[in-house]
Length: 409
Image (tube, rainbow, N blue to C red):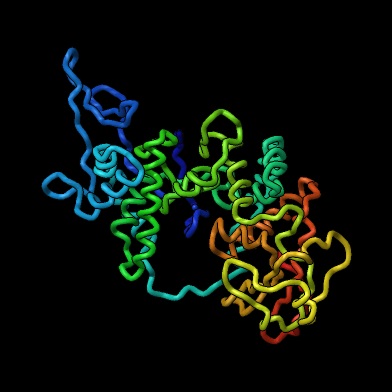
């Protein structure tokens, strides 16, 4: 079960799968004379005069019709969830009747109407920064045993796990203060872009998962807090990821991604393992690409080429280190900076694409790898990811491309 912790979110990052992280939500109740308070099952009651009975005062949310029943679409959803998961219908309806419209979530999801130019270097500077690097070293040192255990079990280097938690929440500093029930109901039933019905359906699925987790006693949906998109805890898992991939790292019989660092660490490792992480393979292959690699560039969340084809196109491997990456699928990606007119190309392994399942963004996955480098270098940890110095081809107007142009460090 989540123990609510209130922080101010300083970064807004949309996680399309799980993946990756806000302002406060209304309290469910506060103790004190004459004030409402929350009972252990989340039902709000009023403090009665001394000697008098407690009078139920169930809150009425923003998805309730004028006659006191759930709005038709929400009522249909409640029946489907109750039937599909064998949960008493009144229990589902009671939870949904308390959901509030989350204006911040709707505002942040509203399309601006303007095309935002991609700016890789700016993105990287925001995420691979001195604070995350410095605190990442401290986080690693403080949780070394848990990181080593998760790395052995799931095959994911500690540096990658640390970097993800750093980018997502700065090691638990910014986990979000939106009530997840409210954000998911808002984005599921009143998504601000009518042209994207698939997005609303995705958030309804996450709301369904939240209700199931609540019914199973794995969290309290009336209290669970997270980002404006519904992501929770140190690793910012959506309810569906919590249900399917979270792990009990401290072996206490429950998963607590807010209160247990060991659970958060193990859950990141298990998520990546379940999405194709290959032990002993770097995120980026140590490949020197040809000076004009545009024809090799791919999109999508799976690699589409391999080493023999890259070599035939003029790529060459750097000397030293393991060659295990030559046996796995590869993909050439373009970290485009439209503001500066720069293209940075890298040779990505399946582990890069595993990271894109955490957040469907090449910028995100590359930033995780780069931050992992920075932290591992300072810790002095010899994991396979450190072999992965990006061999890039950077094209700038007026300059001759060079395959070994360094990343901005």
